[in-house]
Length: 415
Image (tube, rainbow, N blue to C red; front, side, top):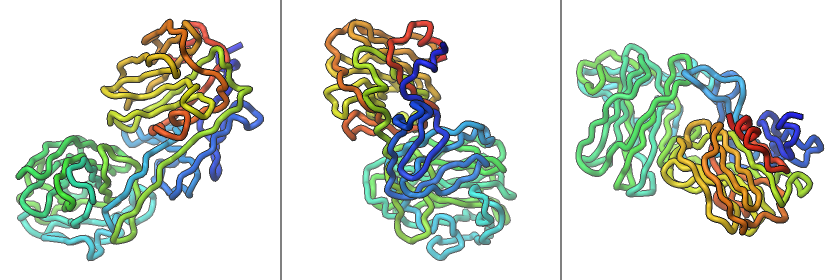
């Protein structure tokens, strides 16, 4: 008998319908998850293209590695976010101000497979740009701006963010090599925290800037650049643009299309209610997940077997400083340092007097406590156990076991 034959619930994300995420085990459907999301949302499909998914349909998102779509999807769960960048795919619209630059609409294939990407052409040797003023509604917060950009005749672009007075910051990107350049700050109202580029294939990059803004208004600007750190001698330089986004939050999430001149909100994903009491053992067992966090944002995110309350639960969760923790109600959590934005295989063995956390093939920590509460277990939720502290990230697999697996089995499972 293999380890997998001992599983009670087994989720390998592969099948969905409205309000349902199908599990592999148990075969009678008792392991299927309920899923809700009060809006449409986007994902990367099996062809590597961004596409919209209907309200309440779970998202099976295909990873992109160096612009190449991978074979196996992950369940994508994200918090609510609002895109404040209006006309996010229509840079030719008057809502976007063009200065020493022109926009030619619908020139090449965009990351969603349609011919909707626009061409920005610099028309002067001074700085060129396409911009809009936005009310981001939250002053003194971390915010995230992004554009999908493809090189034209310019090897570089930069994103400028400022508070419509004299304070701002620039971030440069190398569109040929796919590398993040330098940032420059002027004044004190806006500062860059971090930047990254995500390769979407076909020479498209999502250029992302996380910044702090002390005001309720921010101006977001995109320009073609002559070189990393220089905007001089750019006349005639071109870049292709698509999919602008500005959100309040410390990391980028999936693209939220916005056809309006206002804002558009994507609702949070909620996934819960897999299993019945028949799939779990109150005395002993294992909760196993292969997961990847959206960001290291110091928030608590739980995946739990429970009775629907926090009084009886077995949980794997994140905490601060890149730490993976596991706990049951009534005992202190045990933890392990790990880069939570990496793909991690995590198993938590629960049994009175014999608790153990395994991460990526190694036993990370143990507890001999005998006061843990885990009775009446009858469901798996991507939350704390009572509809709070929802878990957000990417899930490649989840399994539960009704026996406390051996060390060799736990090593194999998490390797």
